[in-house]
Amino acid sequence: QVQVVESGGGLGQAGGSLRIFCAASGRTISNVAMGWFRQAPGKEREFVATISWNSGSTAYVDSVKGRFPISRHNAKNKVYLQMSSLKPEDTGVYSCAAARYGGTWSRTISDYNYWGQGTQVTVSS
Image (cartoon, rainbow, N blue to C red):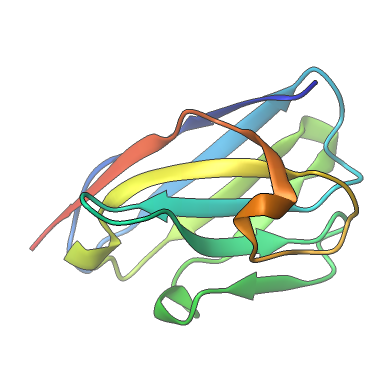
C-alpha cells in the first residue's frame, strides 16, 4: 500500500511560478511511474505530466509542455512539478499518483491506483 500526500499548492499570479510536490510512504515508489493530474472546477480530471521510474522519460499534456517540468527523487520518495509561466487556466486541484504496475510512463488515469488527496492551485490574472 502506498500513501501519497501532495504539498506546495496555493495562489499564484499569471506569469509566475509555483512548485508542488508529493511524498509517498508505505513502500518505495522507485520502481513505478508517477504522474500528475489536475481537475478544474466543473471539468473532468486530466493528465498533466508523467515520469518513468528512473526519470529516463517524461510526457506532458500539450498545454504545459515547456512550462511544467516533472522530476523525481527516488531516494526521498518524492515527485515534483515545477510550474512556471502560470496561466489562469492552470487553476485546479493537482493530484499525484503512483502507477499500478511497471515503470514506463503513462497518460492513462486507470493505470494509476495510488492517489493523493490533491493540492489546490489557483492562478489569478
